Length: 545
Image: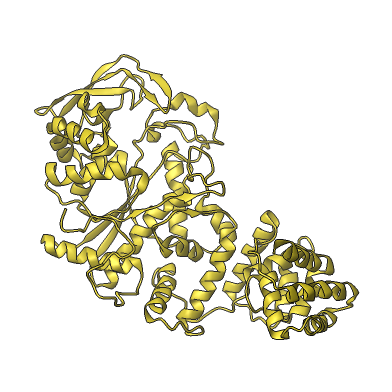
C-alpha cells in the first residue's frame, strides 16, 4: 500500500491535516482531497479519476445496493469541485449465478439456479433477462435521484475481451494466488482449482464447474462440471468437460480476483466496499499490486443497513427496501441525504425513517440559506455541504416553506376520503403557510404515507410532574371545547394552573404532536385533528413517560 491510503479508517480520514474546512466540509470532500494527494504521490495521471461501484443483479435491488453507486458518485462530485475530471463507473455483475430464489419471487426460477442471471428469462416478462430487470430497477432508482454513472455490464465486458489480459496474468499466477488466498482468508479451494468459473456449455450453470488447467497459448481454460455445495445445498454437475475462452463471456473470474482485474483494466482509483467482503478486498488489493502491477484504488469501508429486527437487508431474505418504495413517501433528496450523511456505522432502516429525513432536509435548507445559525464553523460547513450534496451541488435558488411532514400526515389521517389534498391545502393556508410546488409534492408524499402507514412515529417526550398535571387538565378542557379558540385558551389555562410558563408548555405540546418545538397555531390544528385524535395523542404521551 502507498502510505496509509487504503486503510479505510473513517471519519478522521485526514489525521495528519489540520482541522480546517476541506471543500464543502463533508466526508466526500475529505476523501477527494486525500485521493488527489495519494495519486500525486503515486505519480499517476490525473486526467480522469474514476470511481467504481458494483451493482448486483441477482435480486430485487435495495437501498443498500444503491448506496454503493450514490457514494461513489458523491466522491466524483467532490473531485470535480476540486477541479479534476472524474467519472463514476457502475459495474453490473450480471454473470453472477443465481444461488437461491429471492423471497417473494416465482418458484419456477428454481430450474435456473446457478445459471448466470443474464441467461435467465425475466420472470415478469418485460426485460430481456432476469439481470436486466433487476439492474433496470436500480438504474431507475439512481436516475430518479439524478445520479450519473457510466454503466458497464459484466457479461458485455467479458464478451468484449476487455479483461482478457488481466485474466491471463491471474491464471498464469494461479498457484501463488491460491496460496495467498489461503494465507489471507483461510480458504483453500483455489489451491485445488483455478480462480475462474466457466459457464458449462452443456447445462448452462456456472458454479458447478471446476477449472483445472489453463492453456496460455490458446487462452482457454479447461473445466469439468462436477457439482458444488452452495449455502448448504448440493447441486449435481452434469459431468460435461469443455473449454472456456477467456476472451469471451464463456466464464468469469472468482470474486477474490475479479475486482483486481476490473481495477487494472478500467483504471479505477476509488471504490468503497462493505465489511462483508473485506477479505475479498484484501486479496484483490494484493493481486492488483503484486500480480497486475496496478496500485489498487483507495477504499472506504462502510457498514450495512439493517431492518427493524436487526437483520442485514438482503435480496435473498426478502426484507428489501427499494428506492422506488422510498420515492413513494419521500423526495429523492431525502434519500441522498441518508446515504451522504455518513458511511460508517450500521443503521436501522425502515419506512418510518423517511419523515425524519424529510424534516432534516428542511433543517439543512434553513442552515444553508442562513435562517438557522450554527456557531461551530466546521459543523456549519458540513451541514451546508450535506444540503449541497443532497441536491448534487445544484441547490434551489430559494428555500421552500417548511411544513412539518408529521403535520401533513396527521391532517391526511382525518381528511375525508378522496379529498385529502383539498382538505390539507385549505388548512395549511388557514394556518398561514405559503404553498409552493415543492410543498405540494411533500403533501402528496405525506398523503401516501398516511394511507399506507398511518401516523408518524414519535419519540417519547419527557414530562415533568407539573407538565403531566397540565396535560391532564388540558384533556378535560378539550373535551368541553367548542372550537379551536377554546382549545387555544385551554392550553394557556392548563399551563398557568400547573405553574408552568405557557411558552414552554406550548413547546412541549408541539414536541408531542409534531416532534418539534414550533408549528401552526396549536388550537386550530388540534381542532382540525378532532377531539378524539388530539386526546389519543395526549393520552399516549402520558403513557410513554
